[in-house]
Image (cartoon, rainbow, N blue to C red; front, side, top):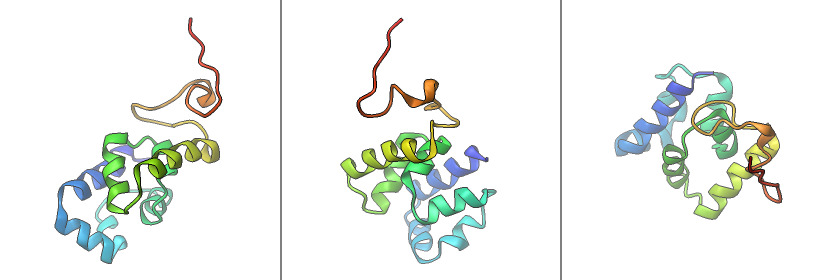
Length: 113
């Protein structure tokens, strides 16, 4: 996995309106400029917000990408929850989880030590 490049493409998209236009016209053209795995490319093209979150993309970066795709706030949050249910705990980055994500999903217990 190349979390740096995955977040780099999202950062670039978030900050460059012309790149956004190009991405919407030809995502493959834009994504070919970054060192990404096939899974990352697919998640960016679909877009699969849940998988991107589980791969470790920072939520501050990811929320702008969701907005680019006209994904409403509540749907964005739900997509992250569903990503954990579908793909498992966040694998990398600042949101990497322990305990199989039990503290981050609906109806879970929060344990305090």
